[in-house]
Image (cartoon, rainbow, N blue to C red; front, side, top):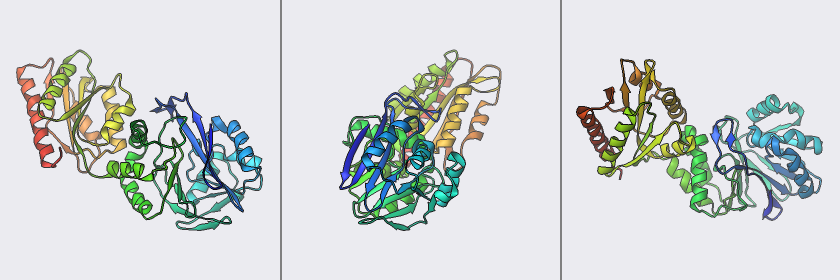
Length: 393
């Protein structure tokens, strides 16, 4: 737990969850995570977001001390339980407090946490609330990463509170992000796993943020940014349409055929100056795979045929690719089969429609022979030409 004053009468309360290793029963957390809340002491005392239910008791204990026993408003920027889960306990402890959120946020909090309707103050996009020396301004920022999300801005303090946007799953003893590689990678992992499907929405919200005077960006997970441009610039790069001269190769091999082809294919890509990133699906950290998809120009999936279709692990990765919606331009398949099947069609039918170009797959009956290796080299050469056509290096 860290409590720190970030501006006069503005406090950050960071609850470290050092040992949490899975989020939403889906997302690996190699570095744990944090749940961040913020308190503004003014004529009205305002709590911005709360904490995960597993930290509620400790959070309430700290909040009672830091707040001096007074909370007038609880702002819920985002209704997901890792941020809203302690709201019922806060309302029980501070019985006169009311919850400020969007219309959709109120509906979700009512359904998810049974917060009574008469507890809500519903704010419109651009609306302000006077709390004394400050007026807090609210902006609706849907789909970062739920439909109800808002961000809260304090013009007097030049602090932007934006819950999940710009967050990172990173438990640390440091209150502020130092701008080092560890923070960057944690933030990129968080973007890849959670925010990337909403890339086009985030582009619009970044334009809004560019118009605000900001000294501090205060997210709900990970360290606070006292150098806001560090994370803003990173996001501008990630949400842009720019891709890198990379090929990501998720693969699974049952009896060695696909593994042999992938090894050969990786060498041929490297010979052509292309950064090749193979991932053995059965052992890889799925978060690392997601990170690799943020910038890559091409993804090539390697899979054997199992019962007439792709290996189940390959289906999972294809579903993940479709769900995350990376800005990848080209996709292909390396496939080995024994007596038939429809692997390539099943995979390509699962892919998202749009600007993705399907490159000629390499389909091999059994173990690859000399002619098959030639097809793999042709695929590497085709990818080189495609990347040159995008003017990427």
